[in-house]
Image (cartoon, rainbow, N blue to C red; front, side):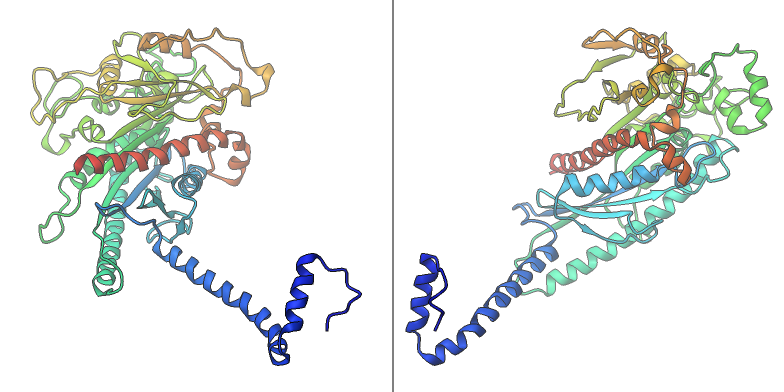
Length: 500
């Protein structure tokens, strides 16, 4: 019997009376029931959880589940390393887990540089997998020119894509086998979409644009060894951060006379500097703004050099250019990073609200302006036409790139710098549209005495020391990573819906 000295609540008093009414044998088994019952409930709960985890994604829609494999390449810049965008890679993984679904499953990816370079997540019943390659092709060899670096990058990407697609095909075959052998689960159609995105930092943006011309056949002639058509790879997002799209000629921090630039480039004795300054017969930077078969002087190219640089870039669902404003970047001007010209007629539409066509980067206090240029669709030109430019100038290069349609993000990180190092500048008057001239004149205003935004705003992580020194810029990369992940998910699903 329970001690009568206990002060019991009404419920406990009732329970005590019920226990007293039980027969002696039942009262003996009661402690065993009390101990075992919670264990049974716990085991049942774990089984249900494991089933949910194994399922990976919520129940698919009637049209079936789509498995999206997002292949992302991070390309470092001049004298950089494969660790340069290490924090960006980490931020992409973090955002993919947080933004796509709270219930995510980590995998290891074959051929990746570390165990954290793959993320598998669910979104609206679909399966999204993110795999990242931190390019190593141009580590310690970034001085021999844009063309050589672009070719090495293309070869590295081609091999990596082959490895990834082979892994995806094996995984799909295993899933099909499991599905066909299962007799208890209702079969549901599953399709696989492979996408490709690239984020190039600094010179890596030029490497990336050159490499796309070498990789064009991967996106459009995706056949196996037997000549059978495989699922095409969807070019998704192409992003550059502080990339010298116009080179360095007349784009240095303190503008140099043109006659001085050849001497400056010669001091370095590097093909890369010849390319950026456009000296010693180097025209590759401007050539990448031309249609095929044309050179910078209007002559025909040989077949082995006949690259189409604009068309592959146009195939991406979105292009993003991030540039550092107010002379905060010593190495790459805002005009080169966002391809602006005083003579260009390109129109930039002010974006301050998320629309169905453009998602914006979250403003963490460092975004000065976001604009878009409208895409003007052009067909591939194999032999040139009457509208093709026969020579390229900074203005024609700006116009050619702008016609592809870009989301341009101007970063102002002066609040990160010591306040006494900064200058007061006039505010940009809000307008519905801006000309290239207005943006160039405004954002080329000197805003600081400490122009260190080039490594800072990318949270450059090439060494542990760099990572500590650029920690203040990680908030910018977090916001960029969020934008990139959302764009990858939404654009890929939108494209698939339009296809259906």
